[in-house]
Amino acid sequence: MANELAGKVAIVTGGSRGLGRGMVELFLEEGARVVIADVLEEEGQALAQDLGGDVRFKQTDVSKREAVEALVDYAVSEFGGLHAIVNNAGLSDNAFGSLLDADFDAFERVMAVNVKGVMLGTQIAARHMAQHGGGSVINVSSISGIQAGFGFFNYRASKAAVVNFTQCAAIELGVNLVRVNCICPGNIPTPMGTFAAADEDGLQKRIQEAVNDVRMGWQPLKRQGSPRDIAEAALFLSSDRSRQVSGQILSVDGGATAGMAKSLIGEIMEARAAVEAAG
Figure 1 (cartoon, helix red, strand yellow):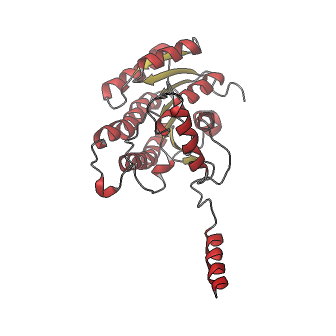
Figure 2 (figure 1 turned 120 degrees about the vertical axis):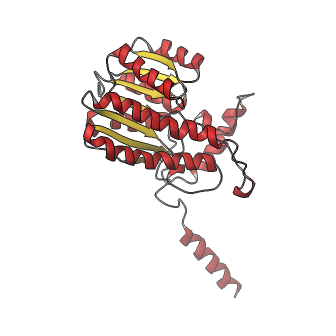
Figure 3 (figure 1 turned 90 degrees about the vertical axis):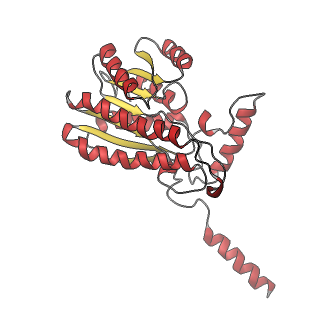
């Protein structure tokens, strides 16, 4: 592919690292002009400087309406329009305990960023797009938003809300030619999913490798995903190739949500054989 996004302007929230950075880099390769939005000013400014003249950085707390309004205004004033926004900024509560012991202390902050931030980004970007021929909104959820599991209750609830909101927004905004879709990443090594806050003596890398080995056991496709894989999905959804696609939830997860990655029949037959062998 080449110049899939030529002439387009995009915003990527949470764009200074991880999945967001992968999207920023690929969008640039494909000809877009991009605004990186993030609370991490030092990292965001440095990335924008490294990537050249078609990138800007705007420090943004996506949970604040006035900040998101300023972000959209900034993109339009710097580059003359807005054709796509990826509402990628998010955080996790890292609550590993049981439901009976959970205190939900992080609920308000997780919901403010992961849900309200997506809702504000969708609404405010769509207001501009609706007046200028349409556009594409891409919300980033997680396989945790479509598949139940243990722990991370605030995070799981927030990501499930993103899925539902995406489809509601797609229904309402279709009349304005604004497409709204959702990406649900699976096992992708990023700082947020590493479960180690600091890289002391290579600790973060070692933990990441151990965690990824466990996660690979859940995944039918035995290939390690990367931020580039998520960026490729975002590229499709922001390009004209997906002009008839809206309200869709796209899992990029190596098949993890398709079903169990191990055979229960195999375990059942082993149990049966053990009983038969014992007489």
